[in-house]
Amino acid sequence: MNIIQRVENRITLDVRRALNRRTAYAYSPENDGWIKYGLPVLGGENGTFYDPFVRRIDGHYVMMVSHRNTKSIVRCDSKDGVHWSNPVSVLNANEESGWENRVNRACYWIKDGVWYLWYTGMTVNEAKIGLAISKDGYHFERYQKKPIIMPTESYEKGAVMNPCVLWDDADSIFKIRFSAGENFEPDVLCLATSKDGVNWEKYKNNPVFMHGVNMYDQCKVGGCDIVKINERYLQFYIGYENIDNARICMAESADGIHWERNKLNPILSPTKSAWDSDAVYKPSVCLDAAENKAYLWYNGRKGHDEYIGFATKKL
Image (cartoon, rainbow, N blue to C red):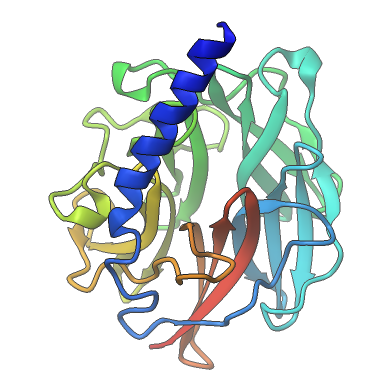
């Protein structure tokens, strides 16, 4: 590509972005009772963090989060969800594998004393899902050299990523939701099941969640977290109006397959002139029954800078 072509491509991208961003602040930054903390809770001096996954373990919060500077997955701990410990690396990239030049976008589940960490391994052209295990939540070893979930379907377009795994006691199986689609930002959400967390069977009617008819997610969807309350599933996901405008939305389901979007979507949107003024995306949610509150962590971006934000809602 010569210099003239590069300039033309840059102009085209700038024009596209300018057109897309005309509706960047069409929605309120906070909706449906959600309140942003205001400042980022992670990022800055320690580098760029993105795609958090948080659960409450033994009375405190454990976050597995992607660290762009080291292309690795790190762990942070917190008593209140706001003040986090210094990041500790738990899984590094492995370029020798051929599919893990970067590792990121992880989730975890603890079963029978074992930490299962499902993560995304990426190259320039592909994204696949791998598994690492640990006894203490800090020292993880890859379960096997090859991925456990690979893109095999036309709608996956060479990329499966953003795993979100729950153990279903009623069915005695793991259920994974994952994003699929192009490698930059995914397009759809899919479902697979497994008895051991290693061997997965994709749902025959995937994808289970796609773009909608409303402006906030008319382009694509991705990066979800799912919690269960009162026998119903709540899905928090990224809604893309277009490739440049991303917001956090919610949907509800009785079976985890058929979803109804929240009428008050999007629940979180960019705040003009703030650290998350360009996009809010990749939510992770914990419910606190004792405090009757929901806590939500998310990516916030302004320009090339990304941080982890925090929001709360009274249940």
